[in-house]
Length: 365
Image 1 (cartoon, one colour):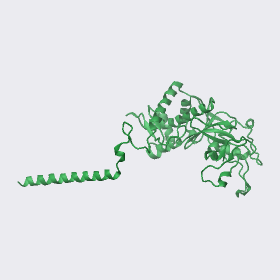
Image 2 (cartoon, rainbow, N blue to C red):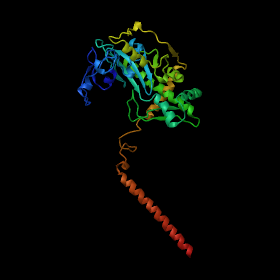
Image 3 (cartoon, rainbow, N blue to C red):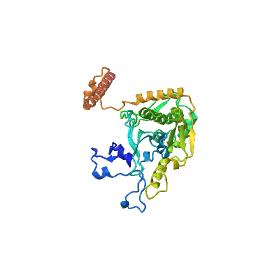
């Protein structure tokens, strides 16, 4: 699985014929470092299977949403628990200066060169919908989020940054935490549902901007797949925020199709051709932008402002005062606060008893 090895730094990308194993400082055994195979190749006979595997694909690298990367058209974006956007850079890896990963996309046979891609990862996409359902309880089903967002039609100035465990590409900021900002007394669950879907689209826009800066490739449309693409409000929002069409295949799980194509094209199988001219066009649904670029840029700028507010919530640095100096309270041990609190509590109780006794003595006279 070439893409997985790339993410563990187990490949030397300098060889134009394809990736070669190298030994990173990860305490990996020699076997773990060197057992790999191209995307399209019949597996070894000792697997115990009656039919040897013919294709090996990481989920997000599954021929990079089949024909789109083979034809070197567009950037496929997968909407699942997270989001994964890839850009095919061809047989030579492109190193990112804007927070993206350089990864191996596929290798269509041992004698073929490996093709590389830039990848941007978003930690929270579909997971934000589950969070609304399971944690906040504002919806009973994930499908209900689409209905609430459609009823709202706007976030009413509410912005949701779902950085529950930090921000991934292009920030790689572990100190960030989730925030919902721009709330007013008129904000309701419909607006929050809309803002949650918008957050997925804004994060995709950030990665797409980084890819454009790294590659200089103008994107005319976004190819999408994954379970979240069944949400039509999300797809329309994505087109509006990117200001380009979004194209959704009739088969949302094209990663499974890519893996099947790889297996079918393996040597000795030959039931599928990966020649771009032989690939049949997939029926697609197209979402065109419905807002002007000025409105899109305004909303995107507000989102970026919210992202900045989400950063720095978790830090190992000591607390400081307004002059940037460490606060004296951070140098005091925890026991000091516990003991002093107990002393104050005992003192307060003693004062109450003394006052009670004095009032009782006065009553006797």
